Image 1 (cartoon, rainbow, N blue to C red):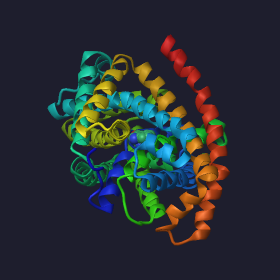
Image 2 (image 1 turned 90 degrees about the horizontal axis):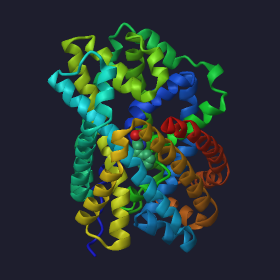
Image 3 (image 1 turned 90 degrees about the vertical axis):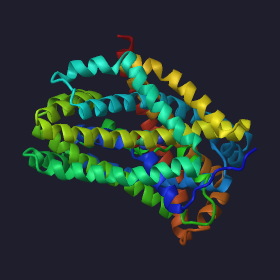
Image 4 (image 1 turned 135 degrees about the vertical axis):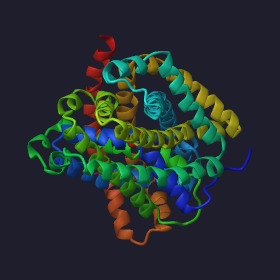
Length: 442
Ligand code: TRP
């Protein structure tokens, strides 16, 4: 078997992990949830969950990854023994399921990017989105996204994933910052910020808002399916994993927050409040493009920047998803990276075709894999590290972490607050499958 990949530098690892975390979930899912959950009140709740649930689980994934140096299935076996190996398979299935719809959305994004570049987006963006989101065009756009993703991961950890992340992540940050500055000049900026930053407490004490914030934090941080285990498995040495988890979580959260500073002014400037509350996808691909078109040539430039940023965010996340599946094939079956990349990518490309034919199917896959599977995986990881593999996890963390007392706090959270909150979130995520299934059947 070939020697395992590894990162060229700590900064490379962190940029790749931030690239995996920052995705469509940040640039749209966060603002959408905030708009439904009482603005700043949701944001505060979200921050609490990132800190008290996301950060502990992220640290647990990094600890498992670096300690074992293995892809998720083998890592679960190494850490929990034969009784835990199945969890690794659950992770791989989740990666497969998430990428198979994620890549379809990435395809829509790429399509709008190209059309804004060419100036061919028609005024009736709703009819247009209906035409491009389902059918042959959507399949082609999805396949192109998968192809790019496969090319990156077969390039290798250092020469593929790291190199792409080191170039694209700074570009992404610049694009988002530019968009936030532009959004500040819109006349809707004032009311947009006011809604975003003024807490409406009446919305926050709903179980749906609370569990929604937890689910959103989990998806946004790419937790619960071994993506972070996989990336950390290419680390060596004694760095401070809790600090690295902190940088990753902070970056992801800052991008989500700044994403809101882009989105809310747009929503209020173009009067899209009603449309946004209808559906997250509709708002992103119908309402926002219509807003840009109303600005003429300048709007075309903004459209290009906006959809380019989304595409970069989606691509680097897709890479982390495919890497989970491919690394499992490499480590468990001894395949070469080329073979694993093409087979995993090819299978997911096929598995994504139903999503490119039905956006209700995309919604269903998101709820099933992007919420239920991830939150379930999070419960299991918390229990595994909190109760089963605790001593080794503590020792691995303490290699680079200065405070034994804080390490105990981390373990305490993994034993109590984290699994309890995630179990409640899981319950509501399963309930929410009902409406998406009926949308699918109607
Ligand atoms: N975090 C990404 C987003 O916010 C989605 C994602 C990428 C993901 N890789 C993941 C989610 C792994 C869960 C697990 O869009």
